[in-house]
Image 1 (tube, rainbow, N blue to C red):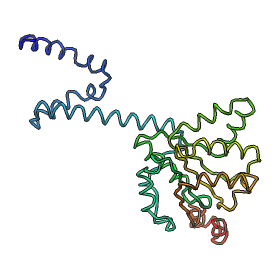
Image 2 (image 1 turned 180 degrees about the vertical axis):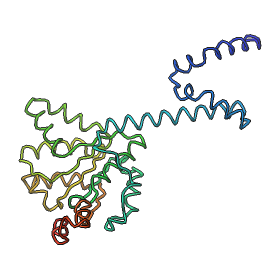
Image 3 (image 1 turned 90 degrees about the vertical axis):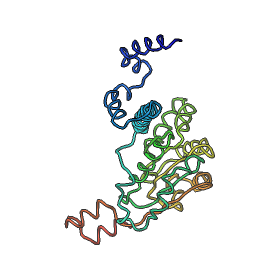
Image 4 (image 1 turned 30 degrees about the horizontal axis):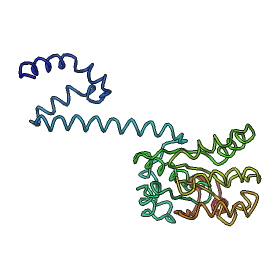
Length: 269
């Protein structure tokens, strides 16, 4: 193409630049076109540098959109971050261990993480925050409560759709199961949980929060043999964080004088 032809084509494209950018789904470039062009001129960027800047802005927008969508798909009960977790209040936690988990190497390897501790010590906060870190790093994530998960599996089993539902829960690279142990499960339901753990074993990561020590899981699942089989798979490649201390909520009540100190302390044991 001649220089004249190139010039003519560029003029035509310039007149329809917004339409072209939208058709290519380059929405960040379209939204910030004039302001970025002004910045490029003020900074005296070369054509190559200006193009690189536009591409970087578009990449940033797409990353933000991917993270937003990932957070919606995860169905977190609320937004929590590691930056807002008060490690000073939970001295039993090693911040270095949590920061290492936040790198999500364990998610990439299909390992498991288990957060143990009494109610109200920040297990769910950490689980949501680590799930958010996984999404930022590009890993599909789903958050469910143990009660909700097992109710769905039991319903699917009664409707002869268990395999379909197990595949659904096996798909995310990280599955977060919150509040395991708050309610006991019957033996049939425990077997359903075992099937899910087995389906994910060695392939995808699972994060579980529980208020019950491993020695009590036989009571949770109604059978020590089933509990042992579940723990055998969960603990094979796992990272266990044990949290001690008093519930944040009870501590707040105690400080305000609503709850006696001794009762609050006993509740956090």
